[in-house]
Length: 154
Image 1 (cartoon, helix red, strand yellow):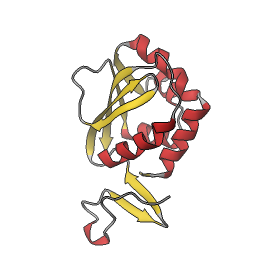
Image 2: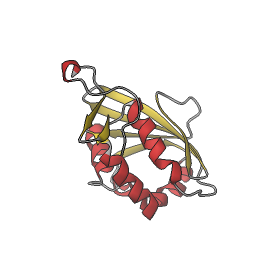
Image 3: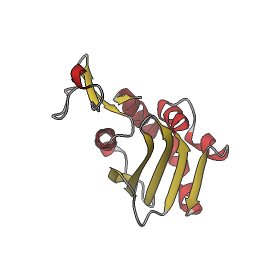
Image 4: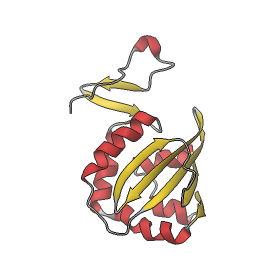
């Protein structure tokens, strides 16, 4: 995969570096805007899913760079927005620890199990979230998760 234009890894700038290029692969730092942009691009071919629409706020606590907030805007299964920051009109807010977020992203912890075990705290429209949870078991979603894991620097 050709690396898109943008910042490149510079060993002299380890403190501020968000991405690196190794063996021809583009890698983005987990939870950075660049990572969200790359993940959104990888999700572009996800199938349309009528009714799978939500404005979702995520809060990841206790990470190496402190707490991180980001949001997704989904419409009929398509990821329209994926940005670092907060969404004033979020319908659902999910809060989890950095360690659990990494485990979910790596496929070591199932998102549904994390929710059921109380490892993901939810506020807002619970019915909307419950309608979306089964999508995380779809084969297309699992394939996307593997692709995103491959471009992620944890």
